[in-house]
Image 1 (spheres, rainbow, N blue to C red):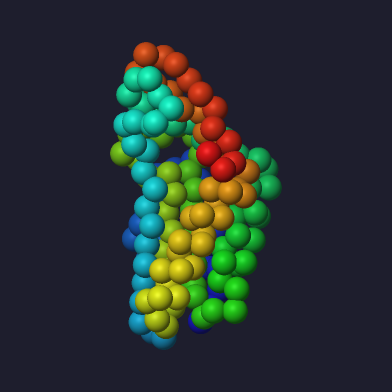
Image 2 (cartoon, rainbow, N blue to C red):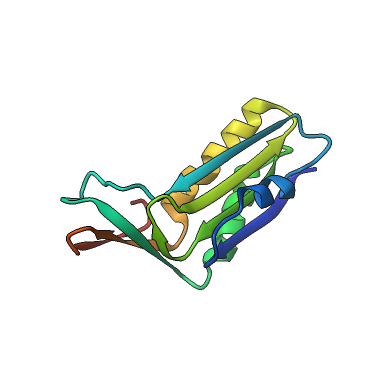
Length: 142
């Protein structure tokens, strides 16, 4: 049952149902999800955040697949993960992750490992846009 069933970057809105469908498996007793959304504030922003613009290295999708595979390790987990690119408004989904496995502890652990590793290693950068027109670039680990 294990494996990476979906690992992609997309300029289109992310569909949580598609991620759940991708990890559907009769042997999985647990499914966890993580949804990262654009929020209206940031500790470093002087005014409200109104949008994020994501750009990615050409190898980012391959890197995302590798991250998911490494996080699965020797577990029986199934992973579906996507990251948006382009301009996203407040409330839009930037990252979607679904993980299925035989047991909940494993599903939660793999899901958390995937998002934490994405934040540290995925070559995707975001330009944060504030209501006063101020912009700031945030990179890997940001």
